[in-house]
Length: 216
Image (tube, rainbow, N blue to C red; front, side, top):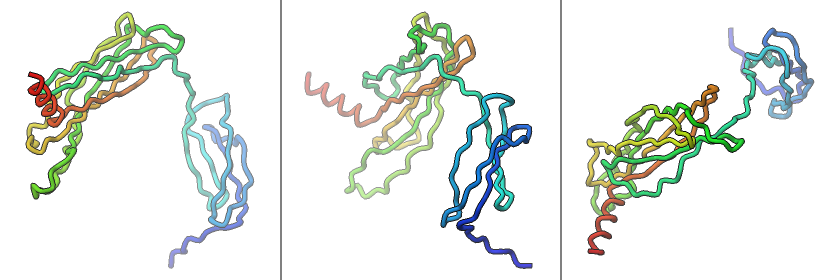
């Protein structure tokens, strides 16, 4: 038995039916496919009844698609990081300051902060005359994680050591990107997230040392 070759159903009338979690019909759309065999339409999700997995079913080929409808919760606070202005060197202790503030204006104190720091390595440049192959960038790696708490002003501090990849050739002067991810959960159980990053590299360190030498 030969398999039928799929064909485009142009100018075909189809019915798309919307079913709720109890497989009860919510509404349907009568549509006509275009020259490419596609249709376009929209449904309004029910604002009462059970939430969860619902279904769209097409009369064309009796195909269906499941999707999830969940309650939308408007955020009550936001998490921000302060800009990192200090120039850090490898092996330095990096300090990152953040805050959690309610949209109403008050500070979110006593909130749990879960954080992790992920390191990535890249090579900004290599002199072409060295005749080397461009080395591959290192894989991203989580170098630390932990928890802390926001203070009375809704602020928190994350500290980590700018650890390089000791297996990388320092002669190629790689740059290290440290991304800090923070999830802040208030006493009501609401969680909001934010992230920031800091770059530390051998080139910046070399430039800083040269400038210091010139000013002496």
